[in-house]
Image: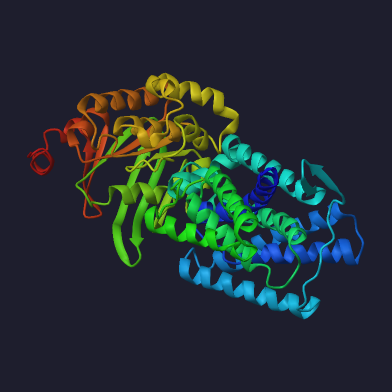
Length: 283
Length: 235
């Protein structure tokens, strides 16, 4: 029981971190960024390259992955999203195509086989009869820290409030003096950074492979659909619902059913409450 | 008094449709003028155009400096505040946070501007933590005006300040706009369907019909103008 509680909390924290960057982009830019999973995958490889192949300190690898994630977000906003002027279907199709292209690029350079990412933090801790690696514990703590900082940032700073404002009424934000383009750029940059940090932890939680972008993308989509797209609190709560559901189904039923209940939940919520449990589209 | 806002042969377009035809008008500093017209005459388009929100031809200048080519936030920064007809508030943010977004370009004046807004609209101070989607139309109009004032505007554009509001609230809004001009020398352009309200508040009127200016003149002269009386006071 304690083990389920602990594992559930840890996985949920990671899921919340995975989903929050995705939520930000949808709220502010109204774009379903289907290439979001590829930030996660590429960040894992970037970390692998710098920290494991070149032997740089883990924190440097993590930061480099984050910076690259940010750059990818900014590039995608400027090269794809902005020219298409938020025309949803072309943006979504092209972001999905981009994810596939990036996967091929990774296969070309690193090969198709899965790689084990060494833990960023070594060691384990025993809590009751549950064994927790420092690595997963760190992932959860970092994810909580990032979510708290992000929450306070959005609620209490001028730029954060401007992000909220753009998500609720872009004309209203513009006539208040907010530069929508800059806010979008900032959001894409932050989202890429968060996705990349989540990616490194996710890769070290599972393993590194060129197709590893699919699972986190599905998790992110599931969390924002169930949570109500755009709500940070909703994201956090639903990340816990989904995280615990997975851990419970793995522990009590069968590991093969890991993602099944999540998908069932998504379908049920889509039918009963299409706007999600915390249903609204603003931050 | 010098010309503060000058609009010269302005045409505005929505896609290929021309919504305004060769509008020219000028507003002096500290003046209150009203653009009067029926629904669809182009009043909102005219204000949107000043804010850089439409595709236009012609020139718009503020204190002799052209606003053409400037983005909306740059126009706000150069001293134009806008309270649009549908308010465009941030529904799930508190009154306070709505006002704070309005202060995005004038952060050094926040304390002073917030004091002014709370003095003009004491009700907003009482409801500072209320989210605006739960507010009445009158309160939203106050938040909208307050948000525009947070950017320290020298020119305030107000689109249909009285639409859908109770007569008592209309009067309150009129008093506030007059005070803004009298105490802060703010230049004000309002649009109105309600010509009576426009006459009592504004010194000069422009009558807009199908995107063109049909009549212009001092409010006191137009009060007895048969053409205007027939068109706008007939009901």
